[in-house]
Image 1 (cartoon, one colour):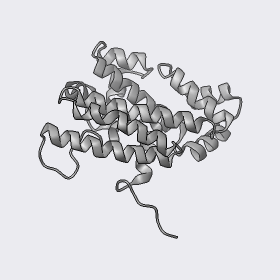
Image 2: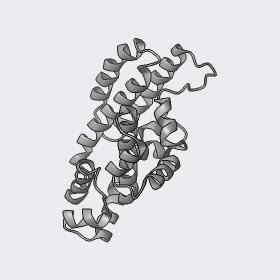
Image 3: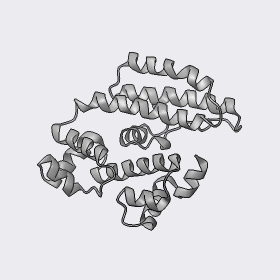
Length: 213
């Protein structure tokens, strides 16, 4: 059987990152195959990233026509962006596509996995545990874990951790809360553990991330 074409080196990693909300790990807003940091190069890179991400969205079930229209919507936005607005544009286009894919896939997930996904998204600031979510869905932790891994492609614990990091990134970009306040809001045991988890996921500290965004 002929292998499907890859949109980047590790397509499966890209799909998992897209589904779990780790959009910053996708090749958006970073020069691809260029050595210059010019705005034009970043815009071209973002255009390529949009095309790659749209392809992943169609692989995950989004209609080709919908993905095409979405790309057309963002073409003039990318062309007119500035160095200051480019990171936000990259974030918005990735999350916009992800929301559409999640909506499409909602009908494909089992009832219990759909319940788990919604519970996490709606209670991201709580101290979430697999036990808590399994009790909400009405099935055992083991059964829920098996279903979640099979249907979503990642463990429930990993999904929760990823969603908390994404929530932390949004709060850091907003700049209205301190690192300690973010850690407390998102249910981390302490700021030190939050910083350690954030660095593990992003390779930089929360403060460094905030300074870059």
